[in-house]
Length: 541
Image 1: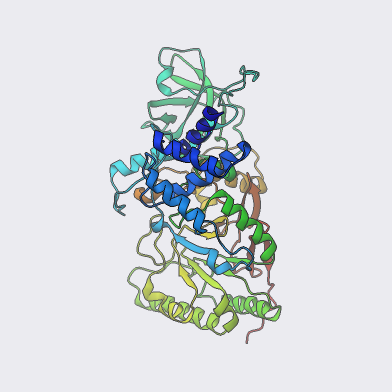
Image 2: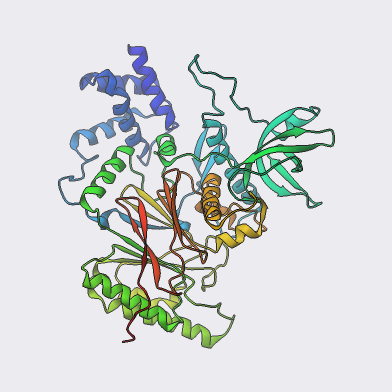
């Protein structure tokens, strides 16, 4: 029994990349005996211990007995896990807007089978090495989820039927094996002759789609990673018989493995803490809403009419949103470089927005306002991730609105146990312009579903090559969708939609100005969204 208990302790700490010496192992067994913990509760107790140890600033890879004792003393003193659960949940204490440039970089290590935090300073200039590393990370993160999938991972149960287990091969293993069938994983790209190929870390192979009836569901673009099955020929090409996106891993599954890693940089919480917050969110704040508006053209007078009507409705009905997310573009057209008159009007529009919102004291006191720039807005850089709106344009907003956040594009909101990604980009058009494969006769609704499926399967907001969509390579990790967020806002000028895929809710609020003032409201307690339309019967006062 002692050996079985030791194996459990070692296994739990190994999951967090820690190794146990004899003294640390003996100390943990002593704690278990001291509190007479039942055998069926040992793993959960050690899990809680390991997570708290991992959160210590001076935690070492080889577990220190002194740090273990400190964690244990904190448990005994009630400093860990005490949150006053009898009190009503205060949403402000559990709401944090996280900009892209504040997120730490975690690279995947094939040697250790986990993520390693990069301690070196990140720069906007990047380097050739960082571009390669970013693309390699995209590949490795997807591949480790593929290999963990039931169709690829061998079971430890002897009764499992292994005949249908799929085996991934590399392009290097194709050499000299013409006539054989292979399943490959790699990135779709074009070679110098303009022919489509599949590229992995060991090489590349040209693809022949002449025998493929149609690809599986999703949008296949240059730069996305795909699973390709085909026959290798004497001409050193792979005749494709099937192609599909890699399987998506749910948020719960990923967090069971990597829940101790603070991907956002805002402080990590244990799975147990998140579960408690999620339950209290449903009971304490079932009606709480986040309003999301996109294409808020401040140079159009009708926009302010719609905004005033929305805020009036909130006040009249006593229903104040906790968060209002305003996504660009904040002008209906781009600002000509060096045009002083247009730049001045651009700033005046933000000043008018500040005056409008400040005229509603209840909203000003309670609501958090988040501004996310669009592709045409004036920011320091035009490459993803985009910096926040320049401070010179939003000085009055900053001074008059107490709870205001000038966010990057993309940015994230951590609320209780949820992670919400906000991304403003005309992504549907960009993806469709760079397609290399899609099912024929696709309807509009299918395209929306394919877009969502492709992004989540690719674990990335922009699954394209750098020459198609430039990004800052040192900050490519801020575009990752792994672990899967709770919600993704794809603010796009394309048609509105909402759907849930693998437990992740994705929606597009659409453009605010049009035939009607339309936006979306996200409901954290339900992890769902609803479409809101104000109509056009607005007063001009």
